[in-house]
Length: 191
Image (tube, rainbow, N blue to C red; front, side, top):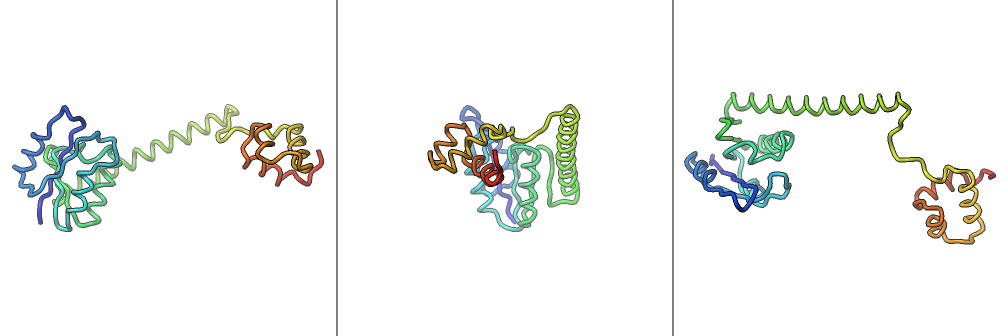
């Protein structure tokens, strides 16, 4: 049961000394570091720490924001650690998932993140409903082949084999997928 530290600063102008000293004082046997923004998903030091750490160990950070880019990201990382039977400790916030109090705090964070996701979904749905009530529709704009004249021209060029499909699409300003969709649906219809 070892304590493994992880420290991160965002820029080369910042120093890791404070975090490293605090992690060493807390009893971390090994400390992995990154000098990279927390918004970057690729963090070599964190990846190495997660590969090194074993079941029964505890990952220790100076502050919560050193580990996760967002609350959602933080919860996902701690959940992953928990599934591997690895503890997590944040020294500044005094959170320790190896204790019952720390587990409670983590579950509260999880509930808050889920609540936040639900609120975002509700707002999105309410916005879509309001837009539909005003006659606005979401999704991709209607294709330019909805014009009967253009559809007739496309069908004629295709049936006469006067131009390759690529050229027909270029002339009408449409993607091939739209052309084929309309040809499939309208080939038998008279124009």
